[in-house]
Image 1 (spheres, rainbow, N blue to C red):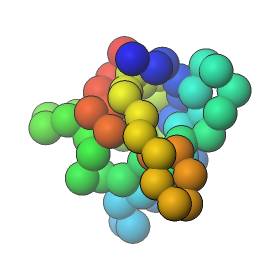
Image 2 (cartoon, rainbow, N blue to C red):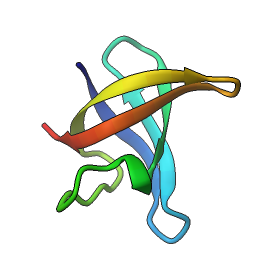
Image 3 (cartoon, rainbow, N blue to C red):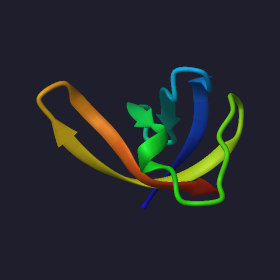
Image 4 (cartoon, rainbow, N blue to C red):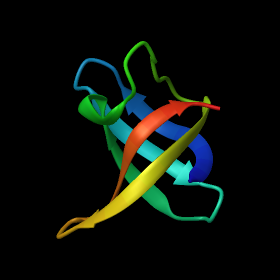
Length: 64
C-alpha cells in the first residue's frame, strides 16, 4: 500500500497523477478509484500500484 497526494486531477477527462510519498509519480484513472470516492488535486490518498509499458499506475485508489 502506497500513500501520496493527488498532484493533478482533471475531472472532465477522468485522469491525473498522484505523487507518491516514495517520490514517484503514478498515473491515475477514474476507473481505478474505489466506488464512492471522488478525487481532486491536493487530496491525500492510498493506493496499490502496477507497472505498464508506459510506467507506474495507481489502482484501488481511496482517500487516506
